[in-house]
Length: 422
Image (tube, rainbow, N blue to C red; front, side, top):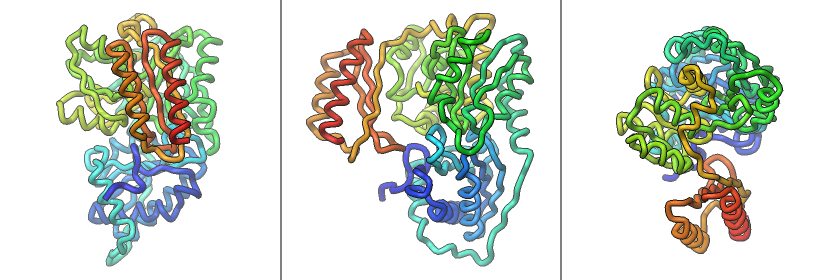
């Protein structure tokens, strides 16, 4: 049975419309049934809706005889590390405040497979069946435990490094500045005052304008921006220029001396050129950090990620972690500027557009035009069109030898998508 509620990364939607407390409670019940009444560690982000939805999930867990362990506000990677029989984060990651969601981790902090998500969905309407209700426990030390783990395993001496840190008014608002300060960096934190309505609003990895103004207006070596739940990071160099996930991966590939990197179809062609010149094998997956994780485990790799800022390092960790990646990136500079370090990877000009659609099924005529353009571009570029796994949009990415050609290709395809699907 195809998944009805699960998308690219858990269950997500607009609160009160696609995502209701009733649905989240059913998910809690189904998750407890699926894990045979096990212990479920539950964290949440800083959205106004997250406390109520966390309670709803816990009600579902205990109705099925499970034990819900509530950890409070925590970044997604912390929940992965602290997972019991299951780990759950009430968060919509990088989405605006009106969205929320539920992300799942299985034993060992591994993201669930499509088949496992289908099994949970099949239990949404099953009777709770518990002979007696389960229980709810609360723990207050989880943020400190996570911070200690990340600083010890991924930190290095950052004495004197001047860093602007954009916390997206999310789960890293207290943790990330502390981590950099513990390692000796001079830190200026922005978007670190969550009020329930400002997560990812004009800040964070999805809107770098605040960080760009901060870096350009101050005296910084670099800036880093996380998303609301902490599983993404992007960087700006000292001039306020973007260093995206692809270039972060390139810097870390050399720093960690890996011979394999897993990336997605969105990754810039320049990364493939960088890797080929250095004998690094690249494994390409569908979009979604879960697929990158699956590839790394299958191939025995330790480094992977996405252009959007999901960076996965499986040494001392089980999933992607924005803070761990940011600390590693700073440590990899070794006296260089970020611009100098990132210059190891050439970048092909790209253009992107998200087109709102009624249906996400690409018609044959559109697929044929995409194939024709890709044949015309050859090794000098590409056109990638894919339905979003989390929103009612089709995402368009074009690459070409020049910015003008990439923009022209993107505009052409966007017009076709609007005509066919809008």
